[in-house]
Length: 383
Image 1 (cartoon, one colour):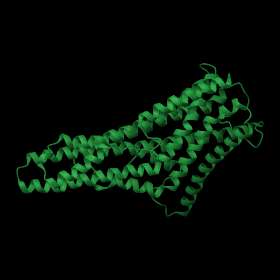
Image 2 (spheres, helix red, strand yellow):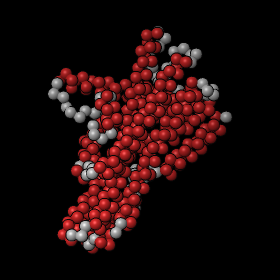
Image 3 (cartoon, helix red, strand yellow):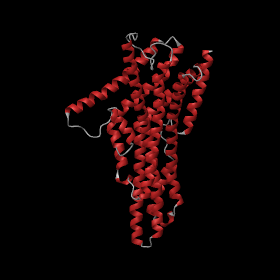
Image 4 (cartoon, helix red, strand yellow):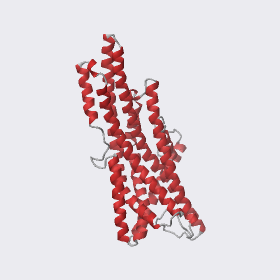
């Protein structure tokens, strides 16, 4: 995969994505079975976590303890389903980035896009490492506690785990669910970050091309050559700007509704995980697990808001790039085209779900404040 290779490698590993359809029936059947075994494992775990919460609804402590992980897996199921259903639209989005107009024309343009590609890879790898560390702690923690037959995930088990074999098989099943869940969750999240980062790269590329056009016009004394550069290059930049906006709209329609659901559930997840952490023994394995989990959730939300905010700022930079150039040397017709680009860019482009749950730093601050207020309320109620 030329775009977001880390993410699509994980998707192929988890059976969610295939670039080329195999002609071998046995391979196709094996891939089909593998894909749906992982899906069944994740959905099975989520459903039985919810059943456990329903059974323990009268025990507030147990309810709070189970809520944070239940909501994480509910959101994962939504994102997983969205990915499977929207694969045609996802391919269309990938094709937008592969169009000729989005490709670099020289070494400077190549370095601009490479910089954003590296940023997307680093973000994905760091976020994945943080979440896998959390998952490893959750898997190891039951082995470090004194309680017998403790499991990584609190879920309803319709059979006895007293026999050693039953316990070991259930433990391994839950460990597999955690690992696959983390790989899928982080890959789906960092895929959205990656698309936003690459869109920022395209806006910077557009700004560079606009600057280069006016430099070429100033340096060229041939009127015919000037006219050709002016007509072709500015028209191409306008098309590039329209394509960037189409990409942003595709990202918004494909992913932002799942991000809105994530933000809603994260309010409860953050609140309950902070509450649980305050009840655990300091420097215990459980305490470190909650620290890592809390850090992962906060980092997840922060990255959505940070890159959404960066995309808005990058779009506004297009207007600044046009205004800072010597636009007086071009014809009135071309000025009108650039004026429309400026007017559109000055408004910015904020990713949001029907005008609510916007991806910017103000939303991140609001989520943190609301979660802390809910935590204080929960603590007072428990006291």
